[in-house]
Amino acid sequence: MTFHSKLLATTAAAMLAMSGVAFADNHAMTGPNGEALAETQEFTYRVLDEHSSTDPGLVEDVSGSEIVRDLFEGLYNQDKQGNLAPGVAVSHEVSDDGLTYTFTLRDDAKWSNGDTVTAGDFVYAWRRAASPELASPYSWYLGLMSVENIDAVIAGEAEPETLGVTAIDDTTLEVTLSEPLPYFPQMVTHSTTFPVHQPTVEEHGDQWTHPENIVSNGAYVLTEHVPQERSVREKNDMYWDAENTIIETVTALVINDENQALTRFLADELDRTEIPAGQFPRLNEEYPEATVVAPRLCSYYYMFNLREDAPDWLKDDRVRKALSLAVDREIITENVTAGGQIPAYNFTPGATAGFEVPDIEMASMAQQERNARAQELMAEAGYGEDDTLSVEILYNSSDAHRSIAVAISQMWKQTLGVEAELANQEWNTYLEARSNGDFEIARGGWCGDYNEASTFLDLMDSESGYNDSKYVNPQVDQLLAEAKTAEDPTENYMQVEQAIAEDQPIMPIYHYVVNYMMDPALVPSWPLGNVQQNWYSKDLYFVADE
Image: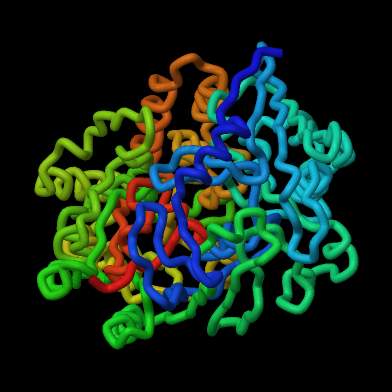
């Protein structure tokens, strides 16, 4: 084997030494860069909806993943710039053929009950996530990782024990891939790959993540969870780096109303909240030190239901293209969201590492030209004054999502005569409806699981677990499969984006930016340079007032 180190144990030690966190009377007084720290280190932030789960094998949303990253720790973490940082693993080797990864685990990682975290805990978690019995909504992610035998395990055609993950000993984890994957190490920062405590899962079943039962290995433990209200995690003294963890308590409050959340932020009840749609210009002028903007590896889009039992108009690509052409994305980003979002005509954000934004024909047209072409397409499809089209837009409850849906419905009405009915649902109900195909047009939002174009484009694969449109294009499937082993997959990605633009299974609307109101004392520690916006409470801190 050829040694190919990403994170050596000595590097991990050096990073800790460089952190420079000083302590006095068991309380951190200075931060990593010598900053004076605030006396109170408690972080309270707003989330829109109740999270899907705190089980690493079941979580499927951004807010749930934020909690899981605090409660559990995988092989690697990310630093403030999105680079790999030590987690339970301190280094890895990769074989000459790129198919075998051998991770060396630290020997001081502990579960919150004092048990040692071992390679076997990762083996158990990965087998569990792949098993048909768990029915993980993210089992397909292990397939994207090209873990050996994953497809057969997910399909129930092979036992989980045949999965290409093995504990050589307590501190050595071996992963075998079915094909080389250059960005594989990046993928193990995802929550689906985190370890779980087998005795706890087996003892408590589907209630193992309840605060009174859960055993976790991250920097925090779950101490309270009131559904649809709040989730509280507190510092885990068993965590291997607890002495350098500054934030003591983290509270996520479910607040569906964005304006109410802003009011509570301004009343010092929250340390972070999203800026309501359209209010960034005003807030940035009034509170410049508290408004935060940065690129984010996420796309906002609408998806069309292409299932066999969907209405016939959805299967007509002329109608889908017309609806997309008639959406003035600049009006949405400048007047509705008004927070620096980037109009999108392709799926993958331009901030994605190594990605070249393709030349999509629609992007180079003036909106007047788009509208004229949209009208032509609708007429070709047989729709006009005497035969108008009625559609339904499904979105999860949010003032911002509603504002966007209202704007788009007005554009469709004015340009195409299309009548749109708006339907909103609570988050988990909405996820289930999308997954089951109980929609015509549904809001979609996707944030990259790792920083490479495939994290977006693989959703267009016909077998993807999150291809909720049920888009099937054999050419796209082939291009995506070839991209995994291509020395330079750029051309494949360009062709997939062009296919999306031609077939229009989804309608990209904009690429996200971070738009937060944030306590200025927290801003210095926030990972604004990480375009995935994967943050870890263990790396955050509040500086003292000057």
